[in-house]
Image: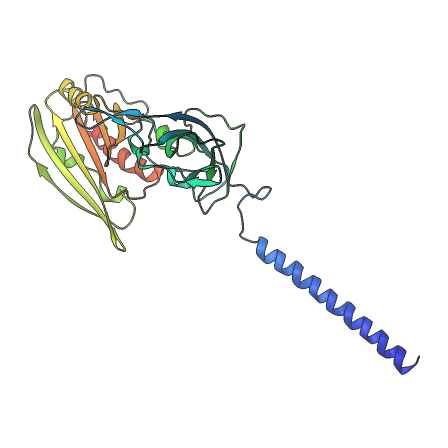
Length: 329
């Protein structure tokens, strides 16, 4: 073999060696990149959604006072009302149902959900869906009249949520949705009442996520009210302060507690929840939970929209309910 042939052969071997190393590096990189990626081992999709759209020129909404108002878009615009169903397929950290995660795309323009969303009768409080959780809610978009080819698109950063036209649009079900909470099984409210001071019925701070502080005290009693208490729960994070205020009234009779509950939600579009005897939530600038259990009426006001998962909310509500049932006679 000549010196020239030996040189050519060694060059070929070096090229083969470099190619082999490159292949090993690529394979190794692929292994590293796949480790800890999307949770779905067979699919990159963590969630799915479907929707239906309707166009309206206005809609009615009812204020806390019970007065009915008409919500109209800006001149030359219409509202597109989207009924959206969202399902968490496999994402362990949970998927938020915030309407900010969904945009409306039409004629090459992307629209964010309009502030009118919170006034629409179909509006629901935001919850976090656990694996398998499914939730149907409403978002409202304001677009120029005559807009066509509108479609809802996922606007959240993570996880990856894709459109699925086969996903049924209907009632929420299971998987951590706040509407699936269940009252304590086996407890009979019939003929029972609570005869302790309202102060002892406020939730324990341990039922809140870490980082929350409390301030509780008796409050003035109203008509037919035996005792009242107010608890203020605060979480200060960064430059934001989130507050939850809970008022509990122990009435002289169950009928008066039921009347207080009925008066509070009269004329208001509410989302009923299977907690306590009666429990509903609605939003009018501030999110409210109102509940009645035996001769006790309560109201929870959420200020600053603190992020609490459905499980965390359930812990708070269940803590109150458990106290009520434990002292019922």
